[in-house]
Image (cartoon, rainbow, N blue to C red; front, top):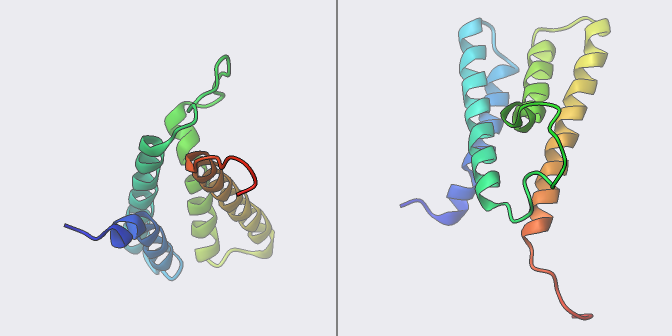
Length: 128
């Protein structure tokens, strides 16, 4: 059995390993392997996040603009596309959108991470 600290780091380890393989990749095989690592970490994180959520996954009366699976993968898709563009030695004209896409993906992931973490913490009563 895997210890809890190691178990909790598996999705983040896959994400970081995927980035570490994608950026210096010199051929499509390495990029494909990096993307496989990256999206396996993303999928594990999404599954765990969905299983641990205590807030409503979709508030009443609110409609999705995107299918839920695509919505959940969107930050990871933004990060992966940006990394692929940056890893190919993009021109300055391509670099700005790639950095903005990377920033948007990281901000969306951080927002989801903090929001879902915040909702799982019990509320304290009083000034404690």
